[in-house]
Image (tube, rainbow, N blue to C red; front, top):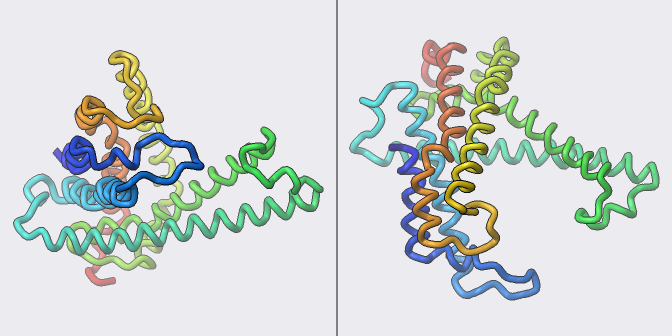
Length: 259
């Protein structure tokens, strides 16, 4: 139910044709079409931002069960969504700082070695230089996810109306970081691989190219994406399930409210 709710706004707006200006293929030198800005804003609202309240619903499902999943008052979900958005933006800022630091260090090494001239255009990087940037991306993702794990208790607490400070979450997860990361490798990565394999097989069976076509999505494409919602959102749902487990096993439920 939550998976289909997550894709419902995207599907409705897509079927109404409001995403067409955003997905319209065009040369890079061509001006954006009329309605592009509105289409882009709708895309952000129905994907990245709409995922936040859906994550809250998943967390509530795994922490307090179906009985407490949905309440009549929608306002608490909205306020908690705003809090989670601020925390996500904090993690994005942290990832950006790590990326900038690593790229600065890499550029210093490259310039010191006399290799700086070839960095003027990313698309003409040699294989070795592309590999360096891939390493930076992996390290950045690794560091950001570790920080996310350490702060996950604070995020989970917010979804059920409790408060745990970021520093308290950091302290409670201190002795469990390694096990939490091993859990990530053993659960989330296989689920991601399964999701990708399933989507590739599904597209092959139906002769579709839903995600990398370079063309505007058709009516049937939106319908297929909506049908695939439980599979597409499976990694996100599993991540919320993991965070709920970390919340229980690291002492989140026993932590005094407001710390």
